[in-house]
Length: 110
Image 1 (cartoon, rainbow, N blue to C red):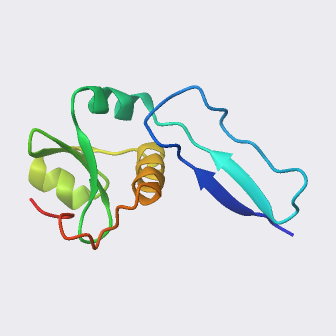
Image 2 (image 1 turned 180 degrees about the horizontal axis):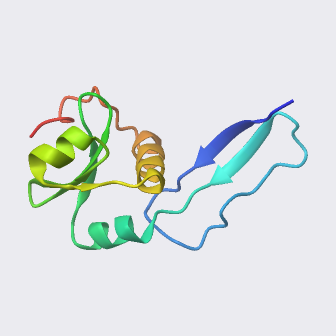
């Protein structure tokens, strides 16, 4: 039987947590700890913010502009860099872990 994966993104963008750890005692769950990619750490140091579009895709904002995005459409419109799968996975887990959703009133605004 496959185990469900519980993901812990931590409370901040910090390195140094093991890539994953499994609960050997529980046949139903695996706990996976993810670390932010270095690119996200660098953007956060510069003051960037992570957010979700109305369609639920990840965006990285800096100084009121989208500098990177999950959606090809956002990248084309805003001349932004396409986020990697690793960046999208971490950002999505992180945003959900702090309670942000695509349907939040301030999400998806340009």
